[in-house]
Image 1 (cartoon, helix red, strand yellow):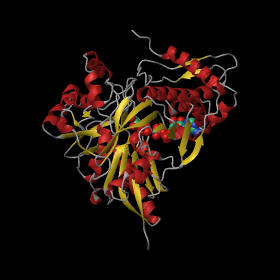
Image 2 (cartoon, protein in one colour):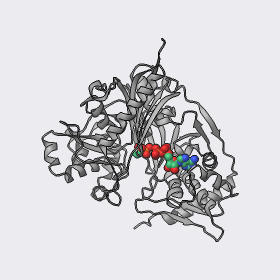
Image 3 (cartoon, protein in one colour):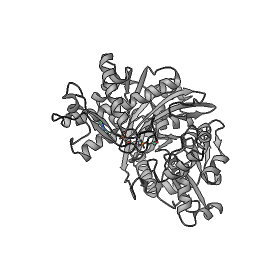
Image 4 (cartoon, protein in one colour):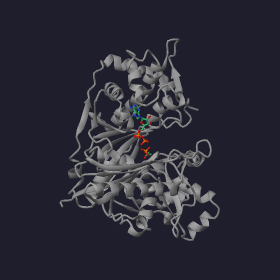
Length: 497
Ligand SMILES: Nc1ncnc2c1ncn2[C@@H]1O[C@H](COP(=O)(O)OP(=O)(O)O)[C@@H](O)[C@H]1O
Ligand SMILES: O=P(O)(O)OC[C@H](O)CO
């Protein structure tokens, strides 16, 4: 019987763990998913149970492999992708975490990063890592675990502990003890020099994280070990791994300088490929590694919006204005325009290009006529305006405006939003046929690492647009809307001290 090779992706995200089996053409053959409980032990703290992450990841992998085998396809390789920056510290002997994973959204180390900023270290961190001093990144979270778990520092000195982002924890568990990570995840820790492409001893000393705890850093396509059949019931070579936003950029075939993808999940992460040279930002965007395959290293500029789909979730679960996120489109379309109502969804501060942790949400322009449709429209519009602010920052940094952006994630399925986005950006917006771009990117990397494709360009050739949204709004109308947004935003930002 003829067998079809397929690629398995494990996508360990903030809210769920899922595995997807892809045909080499990108077609989805099987999938399984488990929701991940969130733990909020204190205000501003966000934790995940790392053992639960491992159990769920293994379960969805096993389920997907079983299902795809039943179709006659043969899993050829496994690719990993993960929520980035989230850290785990675990025992080398048992593989058991010594504390819950501390999630990228967690702000408990804000004081540590503020103190480092006050002491004048921001320029060094930015120059070496391309990042800002912010609790978002991994370094201060690892130090927190070492300082707060009794005996952890001594155990670290004795060589008993390992640390890393979720990919490295899963690689350890899947392979039975390989301590490796990929270069995109390493570039989100604040401990990695993105120019020399190695851990930086000076930064490790600054953040008080022993370099001996950190995994070996590998390119995105290639050897990440083999699953241990006795412990996992799986017999798969792991040949690709990348952080989820970088994987989505690969799944969106953003391989040429100037190409941009924007992923609208809980938050929004927009990445523009800037080619072989890292480009510093004068507008508080992050400089990060897009991917390394063989000797080819591409860099990206990245901007993030903290509340994208989360704003729609708030309409649904907080205000109970809608029963499902999809209803927001029909509600917004009831109005001829926003009638002066703007929402600034700074629920947990504002991300790029402001990085204003203290900013809080704001609703302006209310009248006695304001109703659910205005709120739904203001919420969807706000995500588009924030994307416009990121695209403006990118254009100012790069000296040229992106011609097209490729969108994905839950909100990208909202046609009203996608059209409004094209209108406000004044550029075309492409939505791909395969919207599971994050998992697809990991699968394509595994395909390159496993020799199914000759190159990343070869792997990404299958990308096709499902629908193109073309700007249709008059320039005067766009300028009027943007002026209203800018005025609302100015009121939400923390005034300079
Ligand atoms: N049709 C829609 N319109 C607007 N928002 C949507 C729509 N469908 C899903 N969302 C939003 O997208 C998010 C889920 O997208 P997903 O890519 O699964 O996110 P994540 O990976 O961050 O969990 C939710 O916050 C939800 O509110
Ligand atoms: O898991 P997601 O899709 O919410 O992505 C999280 C990002 O990687 C955080 O940097």
